[in-house]
Image (tube, rainbow, N blue to C red; front, side, top):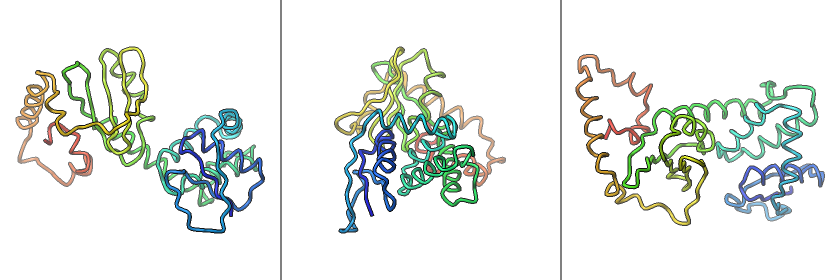
Length: 252
């Protein structure tokens, strides 16, 4: 067994896949350095250094075999942070190399391809909910700030949605679990990675003067429009699961 350790980036993962073929490894596993704990003392360790040219060659080959939509599916598997995601992606890439004329991502009889399909559905569901349940709060510097805590690493998947939708205001979305975010400043929409965790304990003190008033108005609107006799909590939870309530101003 050979264990390839990569830096956790998608390019690093594609570089590791390239080196699996380059060194003709058969019995192999790919693991992010951040999650690696050596259990097999007899395993050979191969340290992967991310190389753009190798990652690009794998990317181009995948685009040729399974198209951009197929690459997008493998990207979602990577962003799912599933403990077995690297092995699933490696299996899918191996199959695409062996059967370049077939869309191997439709072969649901293969257990790894079936996992790809299931993971993509889960990631798509979480992505949709993050576009629906994000609530921005206006801060003193006129930046609209939102904090999220998604089950999957969906920030890269929701960036375009918010960039297209809110082009006329500065905004920031911060992932509390993974400690990075997206910042849009009316010109650029980039990821940012703070050196330290953002201190959110007293962040309400940095609200814009208007923010508290708007939140009260929003909460009052939902209270007044709610018809108590038609309240169906079970159905409501089906559409808005409780774990998302923490994002919603109307639920606080």
